[in-house]
Length: 242
Image (cartoon, rainbow, N blue to C red; front, side, top):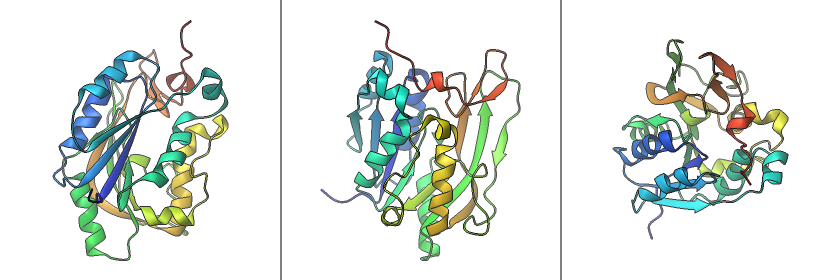
């Protein structure tokens, strides 16, 4: 089986109303040579059914079960990324949240930049942030500078905006993402800081994905008052009903 150019991951957890959009945005990419690994760790049957209903030869769904005790003791998404990022078959790696959406040209634009500058090992694009169920206006996370040793990307680059060469992983600690709950809300940011120290993040000044903040988002979410809030652990750990 030929090696794909890109491996993209999605950690899927209890978002049946959003995950279909995320998956379809990957399948609509103008650059077709990729594998799509969906790490399905939902505790509800609805999400599992939605994910399994989408058939495509480039999609591989991996069901990963965690006990309630494991979910209480660690941030599961970090565990999944630590385990499966090194198993990617592609030359390049990317991650898409299960409630976000890629623009169709996303992969193509990243690869153009890698081709244009052979020294690049990681790059990132601008991101639109929309707040569903809130009056808060959309935001843009721009892509207009290189992040590395002189300037770190934390809180300035979304994890879903970054594509990097798999070979970079060999230069990073085995535990790519922090497992402890105290760092869960900044786990992506801490990873990007470490990544940028060995592979500076080069900008692509185009909006290539939409980050949707909803009531059931994790790192930031819309609360019951319709206001934007930071990190809700209940959106990533809902104990099973007995």
